[in-house]
Image (cartoon, rainbow, N blue to C red; front, side, top):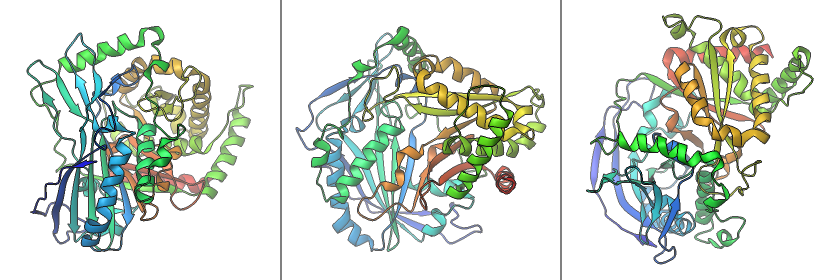
Length: 496
């Protein structure tokens, strides 16, 4: 393990973040450590990993950002002296197996291909900060709060660099640990989607938390069933998909400008709020029963659709999202009032172990196909909107059981049509990630937040922290839209 220790004694006064519904006191951030953590020296040989047609489309995407809040009723000194050494050692041991997260993305100009390059000593930046004066209960609440409230806990990826030969070098992952004295700890993660999708990244997080909880015992990762699988050859190149994906990459790298960090956004004046809504197991059971009956009664097809927890959750949230946006739609002059306008729902389908993808669940990389559902505005906004949404989503889920490869191959063209429409809602996360099982030795998480949904138009969906069979859905909207969404959801749940 290599840890480059560079203590920093910077006291930063942040007055612009409001921790309450009204203006509150300022609070202090003390940056305690700035480290670089790598796998144990000599434990991983220099390795090059090719990128597949499922990795390449993610180059234009912003980093994936997640926050894991934990209860930690100890002073900062206890964390620094007792907990941080175990946390960094376990990260080092885990990176031995998940080395691409410490590697670099090498992005040459056309006609060369990009790849992941790991060299011995490559590392992950780890920042440790102390946050004094914060109300952790407010930070981890479900009710609407200023969406900027959580941004101080998200790490920034180091800046990309450009060589004299025009080769762009991009970091893959960064970690920021924030200590709330005598109250809690937040582990903030940022990673480049090109290197790993949600399933692969959560595999890493589960492994890291398990090694940390066991005080550095990583022997279970030596088991083949637990180790990440890196063989790209198993994916092949169906119908020249790699060449098509490379064309998109070459267009992206050719348009790269002087700003090596990529475009930045000023969010200081953006007025949005973040909230989490929980559907209980009882509510979901009731919704499933109702929607199953309605689909049977209204179906003209002989084929029966399966109404799952995922289907009912996406259905009711999609409808409520559309209704909450109606005010914006009504003032548009682009023909959006047309009842024949198509609205879209996008969810990612994990293709591991599906037909056409002979990959184990431990495959590390991207293995997603876009599940795209569309329906007319008039149908979704009508009395049977939930039924329309539920049937469409259930049919798409079933189609993806055997047709995921086809959807993955034509995904870019389908996504282009959806994005052009301007009427789309995306689903991020999955209850299959089991994020609330990630115990670093401090107990189950208090709250999980996905910050990359802050641009709006997306929902994060994970399993409930409080009960098996429940669901948590988080979203970011303007204050007016959030009020409308909350009202629509409450009314919808009362109706069933």
